[in-house]
Length: 383
Ligand code: NZQ
Ligand code: ZN
Image (tube, rainbow, N blue to C red; front, side, top):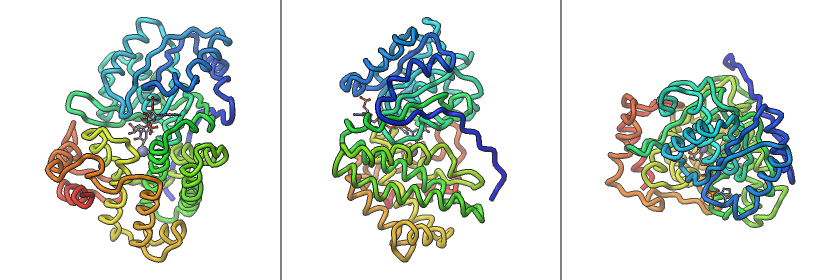
């Protein structure tokens, strides 16, 4: 196991009705004027936005609103949010929604207190300072509610890039599994896939003797394998929703990723798919992961055999990858590039953006370093 520092100071408030605590929590973390930031309308239709506002009113907290965050959130709305916060004297950003609303909120929070262009953070500058951010989560998926990360797409060039830093880790996150019961089955399945991807990205390591984190990841993968089909069959299964929601948070606070190198090649390869085709991140990952795993498995076949046997109850590495792919198909996920709207002719563009776009220098590195030829072959395997 390698040396590490683990600091995950987000306060998680979990369970039924907990959105009513939003106002109290904002106040406790020093907020007096809030930007409520949300997506395309699901929180309006469900009545959640009104309940959150009522909670802020009750705590005597003023607020302004900015909706319209799209899945795969864009830079344009971030600039708008930064201007609005400056004009209104906002001192706290409250995301109400999924990973996209949370990531856009984090970008705004970092941009408000920075003199330069917020995009600098998405080109590698660490985020040290930001307005405090809180979240009311409506989908178990990205894990942004407990992470120090944000992913934004720059409209000019359609580059999808991540930024990180302790400054944007949420001060609190409200996790009410009931709120996820209104999700369409496809979005639920995308979330399940993303959570499992966050686990696999950590499982694929070159570090030795990492038994404790291996076992934590396996436990969470088995939980997802068992609970995922329950919510697809019955969207109102509160207990299964609850297990998945907490697994999603644990998968990405990095508690099961400490002391080990991690992969993240599948995420990087996927981000070009959601940038070009505007597909859901989870759906892109469902197509990407089996191809990446087959391509890199011989780098450490024992690792793939271990997860095959311990999680998927099959013997070989290859069977384990197939079992994972079949599981994703069984919950309604795509398995080919064509299902995302992709074509063979797009591969050179995907590879160019992935390996050379916006400051990159020809390869991506993780479990295995992949150059442009490797990446082209992986995209071809998805056809
Ligand atoms: O926009 P609204 O109307 O709210 O609809 C959303 C959206 O269409 C809908 N939805 C969310 N909760 C709902 C609901 N519909 C009905 N009922 C509910 N309770 O679901 C759709 C997807 O929402 P989105 O926020 O995009 O989903 P997700 O949480 O999967 O976030 C995806 C984004 O997170 C990034 C992804 O790349 C992608 O851009 N990621 C962020 C990470 C991080 N910050 O740590 C890590 C991840 O690996 C990921 O890359
Ligand atoms: Zn992800």
